[in-house]
Image (cartoon, rainbow, N blue to C red):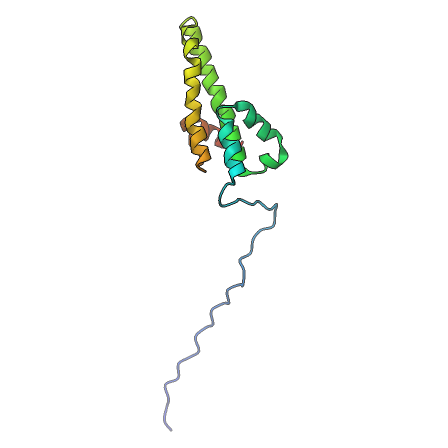
Length: 135
């Protein structure tokens, strides 16, 4: 009798599931690219803060993550900007209030960046609104 080299059967690997299990919960849809409407609402919220406030009050706009992020950030940015203008105007006895319209031009940069479909990062403000859970 000849002995044949018999290799024991290797254990079978468990079969991979057809689809990964996803925990159930509310569906959140993030569009890969903001629409032109999203970009317009987001950009106008910086120089015209009332637009950002209106966007947060409208349910269909508030549900869009891009618009909500920029609306909250635009409101926070404008509040900080006007507090700085007020404090500097008080310290300089009103002389700095003459420059307030020129300082308003600072809001055009994040507006332009938002219109280019970017999630603009304003150093202190962006981190603050994220830690607060507002966006």
